[in-house]
Length: 340
Image (tube, rainbow, N blue to C red):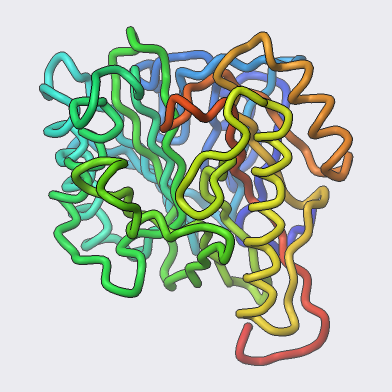
């Protein structure tokens, strides 16, 4: 792991307590297969998605410390020298319907960032119980997008109003809507995918309010850059490709990832991103029965050295069977002071 990276993300065995006690630079520990309401420490972020591969692992974020922890309204945070991780878990039985809860979560997120030394969100993860439940505009994902748009209250125009993001469905009986994020003192460089319509420009058929996120955000700190990749699925233009063909969907998702990395290289000039041991991938799979096929496909098409984890989760469209997100390191091909 490159120690110069602002965020060092890895998959590790052990318990959350072990990692939180081990070093002063642990910013967050994500534990899969538990309700986010079970959080025991601001740095402890349970995620209600079951891990499909083994051994059981944690996602550990480390950043320059020491780490300060605390709470703001219903948000808990861990703050290092350069980066903040914030975590919101709203009990839906108490906060009401999905639209209202989504708006509340983003109101809290924005009010926290306004007073934080790290005011710029760089990546946001949204884990939504029963994401595909409901028909038409009553679908919970569409209601989530509506509430988020009401909180943001920014017309997208030619730029995304929010950074990279992931939106995945947790079990329908999960009690909490979960939103967590990474933020920094400097804005990231948002990247769109030339193969896809920007999410905030989706046509009306996908809901009353389009999803508000960029396809990726490049974080530049410590003279190094990292690519924060949004949840990336088998969408070309704005349409799902390869319906009912899970391996082909994964391959199309990887083509979209590589298209994003190429676009980032175009924007940054002499810096390019690679899938290597300094990054991580998360692979979300709707049907656990598809795990072996997805794993074998990824093993064939992605470098073996990049760590990956497989989680059971529903995707934002019922026609989508799998999705990928990740953190990828960038490599400079020369010296350019503008990127320091």
